[in-house]
Every structure is written in structure tokens, then in C-alpha cells.
Image 1: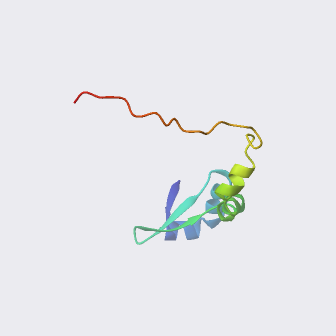
Image 2: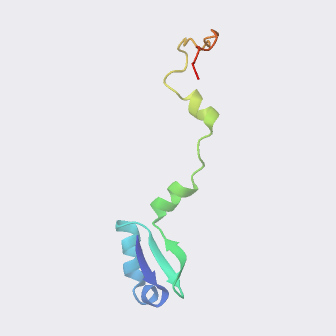
Image 3: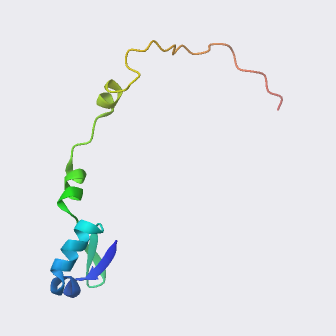
Length: 82
């Protein structure tokens, strides 16, 4: 991610925007500290898209409907010499 000083970003705004679209996020600093990040609309849309819930993830699994044996082994633990 390229970092721009605010004054530099203001004077080269079209370049900052083009690089955000083609190369990825562009960081702008204010008084030497990170202040904002410019991203493309495509990247922003991915970031704000609601995340799938765990339940929905399990429901969409290709393993749905398979009969899987999930019983635990109830035998006692093995002996260990300490």
C-alpha cells in the first residue's frame, strides 16, 4: 500500500484515485500519522458486504445430508507412567 502525505495526495488526487483502482488501497497521512485509506468501489463493496453466519455456512456445506458417525470413544484413558 502506497503512503501519501496529505499535500501530495491533494495535488495528485487523480493519480491517487487511479492507483486505488488499479494497485489497491492508498494510505494518506496527516502530520505524519496515518489518517485515511482510499479504496476502489469494488474493494469497498467487498468490505461492507454482510458476512455469512456460521449456521448458514454449515447449511451450505457439501456434506449436508451425509450420515457421519459422530459418536465419541467412551473407553477410559490409557495408562501413563509419570
